[in-house]
Image 1 (tube, rainbow, N blue to C red):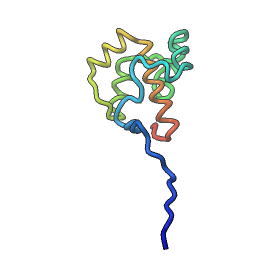
Image 2 (tube, rainbow, N blue to C red):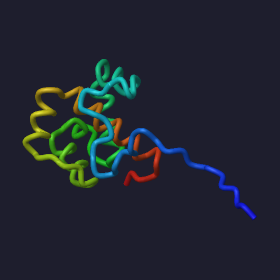
Image 3 (spheres, rainbow, N blue to C red):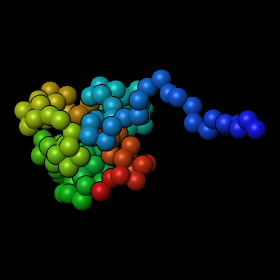
Image 4 (cartoon, rainbow, N blue to C red):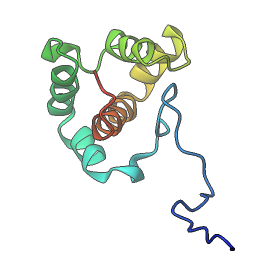
Length: 112
């Protein structure tokens, strides 16, 4: 008797994002317009949200230390120098990337 196989999972063109990397690029605001708008027009509000997410002082949300802490916590490759340069040269983009990554991990239950 022939067995019938039912396909329940379709192959995907792109691999799922890995846990040990940034889920979006530094200037990938198109992936979450709300975060991008908040980072652009209310930078300090978004900074406080990020700090609150990580149980830190509200003034620390956009700091190099916060980005480095997050990156090391989730084994995201990089360096303190790269964190510094992104935070100083592109502060809004850096903060938005951090918040998008936090949101992505929260949605999957892997944020701590």
